[in-house]
Amino acid sequence: MNETDKKRIFGRLENMRGEILAKIRPREQRYETEKPPEQPYVFLQQRMEKPGQILQELPEFLEWLWLVTVAVFRVFRFFSR
Image 1 (cartoon, one colour):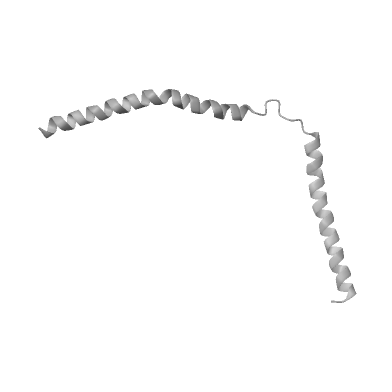
Image 2 (tube, rainbow, N blue to C red):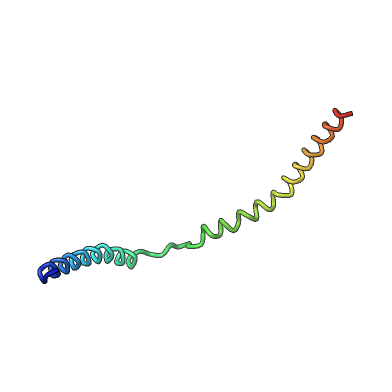
């Protein structure tokens, strides 16, 4: 590889570096001008509330499941006699 090839490749790399930096810099400026959200943990709070709601409904579901299971076995026992 001679000196002209090296200079040409180096020039291309410099241009690529400039293009990449031009794409990155506006993003950094945008982040500096944006305001942080007023309620940053709203989604986290909603996530934490949902399991509690499910746990409150779980005993009622288990009770219905038990009643259905007992009814099915009683019908099965009635027809097996």
